[in-house]
Image (cartoon, rainbow, N blue to C red; front, side, top):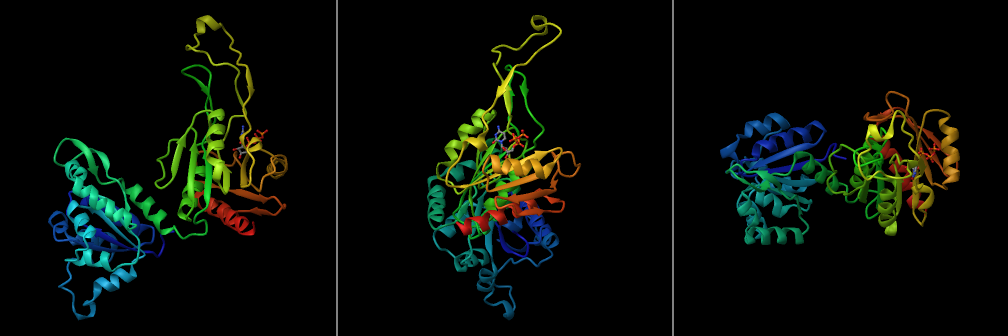
Length: 398
Ligand code: CTP
C-alpha cells in the first residue's frame, strides 16, 4: 500500500505539469511522502510553491542551491525513494536518462537510485512517435523502467494525437502495482470475475442483475498490489479499468465460462466474485420483440446457464461468493461443500451497507475446513485484502 512510502516525483517542462499538482496532492492525501524535484523548464510552467502547498514538503529545484547539509542530496534522495516517478516526462528527460546524463537534480537522482522508476511521457505526438524517442523509451524499458503510455486526445499545440499525460488514476494504479511487485502474491496468477452477466432476450433487452462489480474490481486491484498477475473477467460494470490488470469484457454466463476456461489454463487462484445468471432465455429473438405481435402477456422461457464455479475445476484455489438474502451461513456452507470450494465469502445483500453498488461490505469468510471469520463492516478494498490474506496463507500451505 502507499501509506508511508516515499515517492520522489520528478516534474519536467511540459504543459501537463498542472496535472502533476493533482497527482502530488492525491498521493499526499493517502499518506505518501512526496518529494518533488522540478527541472528548470518545469518551473517555467508552474512555481515550486504549488507543489510545496499540496505536499507540505519543500520542493527541490537545483543541485547548487543546497546548503552544506544537503551537499550530496541527490544520493540521499535516491536512497530515500521507494519509487521515482517522472510525470510529466518530456522527450528531453527521456533522452537524458536513456544516455546516463546527470546534469541536474532529477537526472542525478535517477542515476543514483536503486528504487524502481516510472515514467509518464507527455509531449506532442510527433515527438513521442519520433524514432529517437521510441528508441530511448525502449532502452529505459529494457533497463526495467516502467513506461506509462500517454493517451490519445487533444494536444496543447492543437490537433489530436498520442501525447497526453496518462490519467492520474492510471499513474497512481501503476505506482501501486510497481510498489507491490515483491508482495506476498508475487508471481502468482490470479483470475477474478466481477459484475453481473446479461442474458439477451432480443437485440435490445436482456435479463441482468444489480451487481456493480465493485467487490470483484477491489479484489483484482488488491491482488495486483500484492504482486499477482491478474486477469479480470468483467461482466456489466461501469468502472474504470484498473491499470496493470488484464481485463476481459464479456456479456453472458456462457461467454464468462469460456473466458474463465481460457484464463485458468495456468493459474494459482480463481476468485468468482461475479453475479452470474443461473438462467438464460431459451431462445433469443433475432429482431426486437414487438407488443403488437406478442399481445397482453409475454412469457419468457428460461433454461439453466452454466454454473461456472461448479464446472471449472483444477489444481488451483477456487473461491466463491454467496450473495444471500436469508440464512447466510447455512447457504454458504452448503455451497462450499457442493462446489468443493477452498473458501466462500458470504454477505447479506439486503443490508444497506453491504449490498450492491456501495463501497462497503460486511462479510463472513468460511474456509474448507469450516473455519469461520465474521468481519466487521469495512471498505470493499479492505474486504479484498482480508480474503487475499487467507489466499496467501493457503498458497503457502500447498
Ligand atoms: N456462480 C457461477 N456460475 C453461475 C452462478 C454462480 O460460477 N451460473 C458462482 C458465483 O460467481 C459465486 C457462486 O457461484 O461465486 C455463488 O453464486 P450464487 O448465485 O450466490 O449461488 P448459486 O450456487 O447460484 O446458488 P443459488 O442461486 O441457488 O442461491
